[in-house]
Length: 293
Image (tube, rainbow, N blue to C red; front, side, top):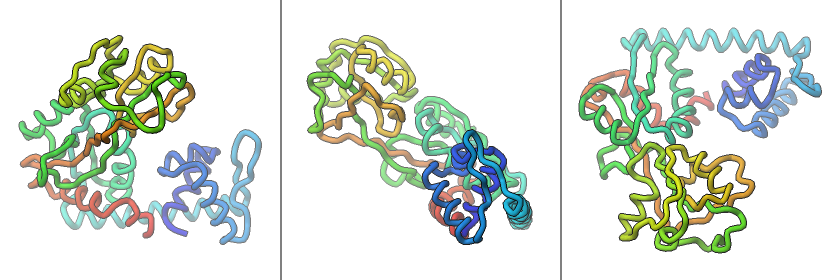
C-alpha cells in the first residue's frame, strides 16, 4: 500500500464513483479497480460496496477512510513545514504552454507537484508556441513549454510524440503501411494548427510540397478529427492529440516518421527562482518517486 492507494480511497469515497476517483488521482479505471481490490485483500475486509449506480462505503471502510484523510492532511502539513524552512512557502511559478501540451502532459505533472508542495502555486498561461517564446524572451514567465527545442536548450525534456494521418475509415488509400507527406499533400485536407506554427501545412511545406485542396482550417485537433469523420478530408495530427473515440476514423503512420519534442525552458527569472528549480527537480525525478513514498 502506498500514498496513491490512500488518495484513491478518499477520492472514490468523495465521488461515490471509481471512474471519477481514478481520474482525480491520475489513474485509469482498471488500475484503480485493481488497486482497490488488492488493498481490500490486504486489509481483510471490504472498504466499498459496489452498487448499480454508485459506490458505497462500509462501516469499517468509513473508519479506514477517516484515518486516510488524517494521514494525508498530516503529510501536507509536514511538506508545508519543509517548504517553509527553505523559504518556498507561498512560491509562485508562471508556466506558459500551448494547448495540446496543457491538456495532455501538464495535468499529471502539476498534480504531482501540488501534492509534494501544497504551499506553492503554479499558474498556467496558455498561448501559441510563438507566444510562449515571446513570454520567455520578455521574462514574464518562469517556465515555458517549447516545441522542438534546440539541443541543450531545454532544462527538462517532457516527452515526444509522432505525427499521424487521420482519414475516414472507408478512405481507399488508408492502410497500416503508412502514407508519405507527398501523398497527403494531394488530398482534400482539414488543416488543424493546435495553436502552433508547426502543423500539417508547415510540415508538408518543409518537405518541399504544397497542400493542393484545404477544405477547412481549425485550431482544435479534435475538431479536425470530427470533420475527417464527416468526410471533409484528411488531417495531420500529433498522436497524443487523437480523440479517445476513433470510430469512423483510420489512423495511419506517416512515413518516414516525423516526431515533435517538448521541453521545459527557464527564463532568466526562472533560473533564479528556487520554486522553479524545485519543480524542475521533481520533473526530472518523475512521478514514480512520490507514488512509492
